Amino acid sequence: MVQDLFLTETAFYADVILPASAWPEKDGTVTNTNRQVQLGRAALDLPGDAQQDWWITQELARRLDLDWNYTHPSDVFAEMTTVMPSLNNITWNRLEKESAVTYPCEAEDKPGNDIVFTDGFPTASKKGKLVPAKLISPDEVPDDEYPLILTTGRQLEHWHTGSMTRRSDVLDQIEPEAVAAISPQALQKLNIAGGDKVRISTRRGVIELKARADGAVPEGVVFIPFCYAEAAANTLTNSALDPVGKIPEFKFCAAKLEAV
Image (cartoon, rainbow, N blue to C red; front, side, top):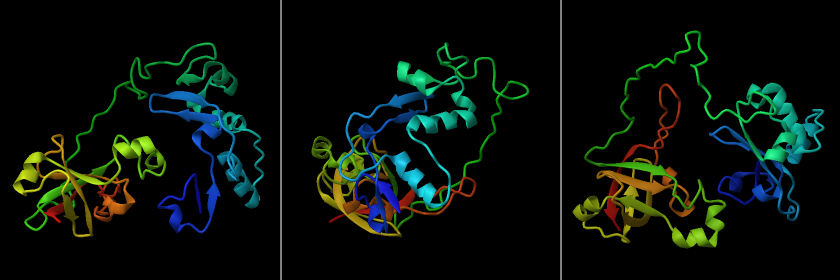
């Protein structure tokens, strides 16, 4: 079951797709990494059969015999304040007046603190603890068969899988198709020009896309954005897990590059 705005690559695999609401269609709060709790206000009506996200979640809960009776996102926020000390002295009414409040906040009539740890860390000694970490080699390193490093990531214009940004005509005109960003020196050695079609291969798969000369990419590295389903970079990446964090090693694997 997937709850989303569009029929995304993930939603293609779902049995049920629930009609979610978009950002400008709902009220609610968002808290960013700058510790600002910001209030968003609905500017558009819901289209078609779309529903508010909190309403969909509540209806699912009720069908599981849970007694959920929220009537508005403010009810959800009020409950959050009872279990999240970081929201102390931040109320929905205050957010309606001020639009955004930074936590921690010492009183309802005081602004939030710009700095969290002014006189030390929350430890007995008030000091932080730095622990040296030993570097662990990647699971798969370049060799004679796969001499390059492949890494993947986002583009400025397209977010994650592009389920929303690739529907923007303006953004899609700037970055309309998948590219492999490679240093100019590496392209020159392979006698490949920017705009030529290339084949990127790893031990897990192959994709074909256009090459782009990019001086910001180190020699020996290929960067591919992962938002293009038609040249899905993650079919190439390594799913080996980091032994400590258990995070897949999607950002580093051995690869080779060939002209098509």
